[in-house]
Length: 165
Image (cartoon, rainbow, N blue to C red):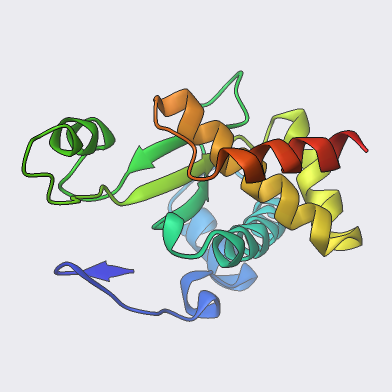
């Protein structure tokens, strides 16, 4: 969570809502969701929190946050910015003669409806090394889509080779 430009650590359990709270809120707001639909939504939300947290651990300071995308349809990942400086502004400022290394707070958005997400979920459960590899490749793919250079092209090439093995 970000407050006044500072990053505070928040326990994931405090961010998620309990099943009972969600069921009560959906019935009190007059929404026509069934209890089963609400339960499924909570399960999906908790599962998403797990992969988001693990991806953030793998990427560390490279991203501000990881979250499911509400806008992606075709691509598996993209970047969004969270804060005052956009990614486009970061690109422009990095070209200035007095480059001050200003960075946008990049958020990696993942398309949870894409086929790649299924492989990512399986890897999270079955093979943590593959999960880390997929996460790094998706991060690099988002950089390329955004028009940014890859931090380490040799590592990127090696990761593709590992995937093809």
